[in-house]
Image (cartoon, rainbow, N blue to C red; front, side):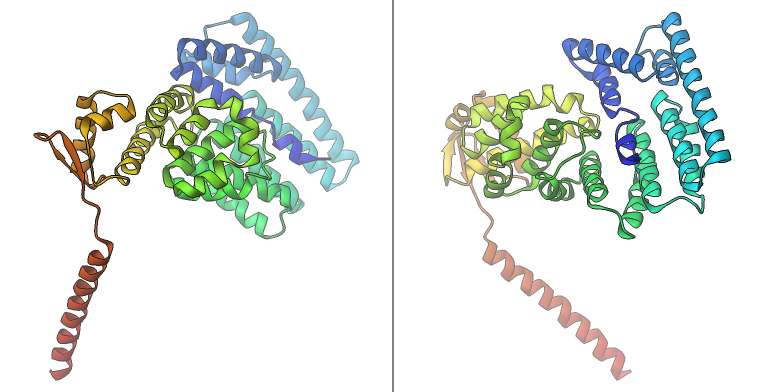
Length: 387
């Protein structure tokens, strides 16, 4: 039995994403998301999940559909309970565990979160549960935690998965764990860690149960865009065969990265706005970081332009970005005051003068400061010894 394939699919994380889009997307995105939600609920007999969405006001009340889902899920559970009993009477420990796992997976599928967690944990604690079964159970619990977005549980299960993988997990499970961790780091604004994992498993990504390849590349590329040097973004992201293959599904992400690399700043601003609308505003994992991401990308573009000049006019900078002079003045003032951009704005002359930090001088000053600290400590130590 290929338990991994079962655990890879239920509950469908795409439905959790559809729920989020139904609450935060544009009118068209909401309409599409609601349609996908209803279709998915019917297909997976998600009685408990449907009841939850109705209670939360995400879906309208539909007594006929709820009754149909309740009957279908109850009939399936009766059949699964029967198979569990048959396995106990006629089969070995391995088959008994597998039958119980099937039942736990179905509980997760229909939206019985607490019952599914309890069922998984009970099987996990059995002495007869194999290493691969334990791994797949942990992945099942991880999926539940991701579906309902329970950060503490996610962290706990990722740690547990690492411990089990280190005992002998196969390549497929290791790779799936890396992909999950990449997205988890994105959700925690740990973009440096996320970008490293993204590059590591980009060519071997095989976790469509987590999200589609294009969605994974979208999240990973945005993480890379914030922390990775310009040359590396070009080599490892923009020109990566896997990225090129799916750019049609994420055109604004591709346009944003390419226009920034090619110094086409007006196009970059347009693409960045598209990324925010199409992806950041409807991503369960990046929504809370959308302002941070757009701000960091703007700072990066300003810094990249300023690196090429000793000074330039506010007007030419505004023209380069396709915005008004007032907008540029306000943006630069805020970022300069925060220490994020190294320049000075001459409002009278209408120019921006760069003042790049002197690296050698900074190192020299740092060495003097550390030397003073060391001398003070030696002096205090000599005083103690003299006493």
